[in-house]
Structure formats: structure tokens, C-alpha cells
Length: 173
Length: 168
Image (cartoon, rainbow over all chains, first blue to last red):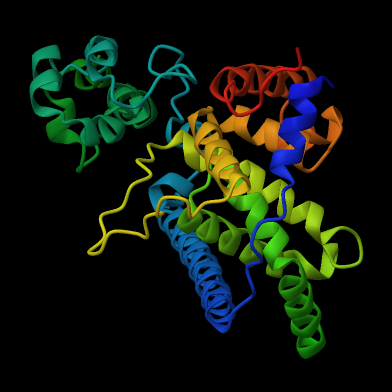
């Protein structure tokens, strides 16, 4: 510490005029403490309100709708009981793929054309019309009645089997 | 409990007010009003930590808060002048003693320093704190505090050349 620094320290430590702690200082301190306490309380209350609002918002936005809670994988095997591998969709394939399945139906069901299926079948109907047993049963039933009953024609299926013509021909012959 | 706490606090503030105010005045470069505001702020902060620091070093806590607040508030633009309706007291010729004149020059020179240099000089030469405690009070590394103090003293050396004459 050189001369200047010693002199500087002496100047800084010169006894200043005493400043008494006056009542106005005390009042100002009390007011400052009260203001700071109020500010703290307000900040804490704002924090609680924000936390509550955030929690409420999170609970509101929490996904709990019936469509979302329904499991996606299990109903698909149950809704596609087609025994033939051509009509059974792949596990990953969705129900809304009618154009790929409609050509498979045309050989088994003579009354349905690809254009009919594509035009008249909305996505909801394809799930019901994509059941191949109903379509493939008709020809089998027609031939079975022809074999089992011989020459007797069943009353209910007569109009259906008339266009084929084979049961009546085998019964007479 | 609250009454005892308030009593201890009031006693401490009343006993140390003058010394702390002088420190605040030096830290603000002689601005009396700003020094009072700074000291009020620091003592309000002291009230909320009084149970923790009352038995240890409340004055050191106030000193640290004062130094940091002085450095921080001076980073904001501070014009240091306030319009008043009446002119402040002006010194008459021959009214001032040499000591008061030196003191006024010293405060004016301190006001010329950047706030961190001023705080480092005041803590180092007025409070006689070692570099480590100056650094702790300012919240900076020891080398930085030492650098602030050295630069501040170098500048004061130029500003106060006619007041503090070098030994020939």
C-alpha cells in the first residue's frame, strides 16, 4: 500500500457527520417490510392460481373419450371371420379398403359386379358385405338341395335354383 | 417471538444506521438520497433473513446486499440529478473546512468511477476487506475484484492528484 492508497483510506474513513436513525426511517422500514410481505403473498397466491389452472387444463385436455379408449387390435379379428384367405384382410389392413377386396368377391357371387361393389358400398357396408360365407353359400345350397332331395324341388329355393337348371335336369335324368 | 425479533432488529438498525449509511453513500458516489434508498432496501431484505443471520454477521449481510445492489442498480441508467423546487444549500466562501472540501472531492471522484470499481475500492480501502471478501461481496472471482480495485485506484490517482499530493 503506497502513500496514495494510505491517504485514500484515510479520506474514506474520515468521520462523517453522524446520521441518526430517525422515526421517519423506522416508518419507511416498516412500510418497506409490509410492502415486501404483500408482494410475497401476492406472488405466492399467483403461483397457486397458476398451478391450479395448469392442473385443470391438463385434466381437461387429458384424452378420455370413448373412441380413444377403445382398444384397436382385438375387435378386428372378431369382425373378419372369413375362412377364405382371399377375403380375410391382413392384420394390419384396415376395414376401409373396399376396392382391393371387391374383385375377390366377383367369382363367388354372380349377382355382384365390381362396379356395383365399388359404387354402392360405402365403407360401413363393406364390413357387412365382405362376409364371404353368405355369398358362397348360395351356389353350394343350390347344388346341395339338388343332390339331397333328388327330384323334389324345395318350395322356398325354387325361384333361386331355376336359373341354374342343373337340379331339375339331374332329377329327371 | 415476533416482538423479540423486531426488538433485536430495531436495536441493530439504530446502532449501525450511521455507519451503514456512510457506506451506502460512498457506494453511490455521494448521492445522499440514493444511499438512503439503497440502505432501506438492504435493511428490508435483512428483516426477512434476520432469524438466520442475527446470531452470525448481520452487518456483513447488509454490506454484501448494499455492494451488489449498488453495482446492479448503477448498471441501469442513472442520471443522478433530480429537479427540485429550491436550490440546495450552497457553500459560502470560507465556510468549508479543508476536510469537508477533501471529502467533497473524494465523493465527486468516486462518482466518476464505474460502479463495480467504486464498490471494489470502497470495500477494499474503507471497509479494509481482503480481496477474497471483496470478491465474495461483489459475487465475482478474486482476480476480477483485485482488478476492479486496482483500476479504480489508478483512476482515482489521476482524479485526486491535486488533493492527494504524491510524496516527493
